[in-house]
Image (cartoon, rainbow, N blue to C red; front, side):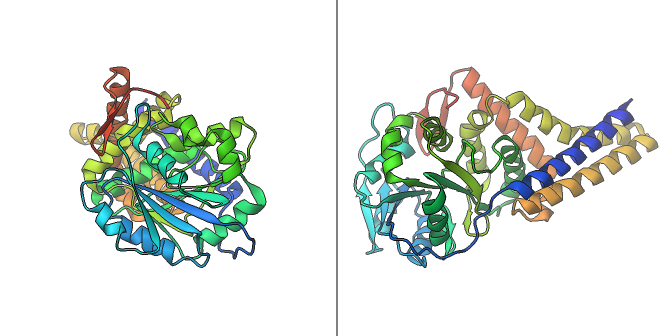
Length: 362
């Protein structure tokens, strides 16, 4: 019986591989191109204790082939020297953020304060841990100025520590299935969101999503609901980020976001994670009872699954070698998702960078 179950798991992975390949063929991808229009872009970066990340982000923005009208960093009550760091960049405007207003999340309120000081036709919201290749802004503006009201890009995720290599490819593989890239979607990646100022104003600015922890998806939905054009496309060739550093940030960051991101398909996500673990559990049992056939079947299914997974990871711009951490990654991802869900169900809320946020699926 278990042999048939494992065969079904192998076939399932095969179907996922085929579906992922078919989807990738349809996905739009941002490629380098010049911008020859007259629109001007204001860049706004929310920063709370980002002294380790900001230098690379700012230097990349200052080195763009298309020069933005202004680069604004909103220091969101940092305690690590972020303010002093930003003051070292004369071409960057520093805004000292006020105390967090009631009903707002920290990131939304920081962006709101930054937008009030901008003058550009387009607004670019980027996170402090991102790095845009020199032609990235020109390519995004050239694409957006012709096509959309909100353009968001996926980033090449830099996974450095073992924990990042274990968890990030699995999380993003699941996210790519729930939020497929395309030209009519209603999702976005808060690490890079480019919006037309007039459309952003009519939608209600970040005030319209001020309490949302997953504010990027909420903003994309607000644009979509009001009839504006939203494109969420592959930007891995021109845009990269190291989202979290080490186990603590991986755990805390995804515990904050994962249940909200995968809602309402949480059970489907849990099932996908459980199927990753089934052949490993079968192999352990087979080894314990010295079942040669079970060892062979489980070993073959695991080998096939890892080959499939490595190919998927490579297309997502992760090193295929990260598949070696598939087992601890699946276990940890499952634990993170359960923790995130329990905090929601029990009304414990979430914490991030010293702030607590209430229970919500937004």
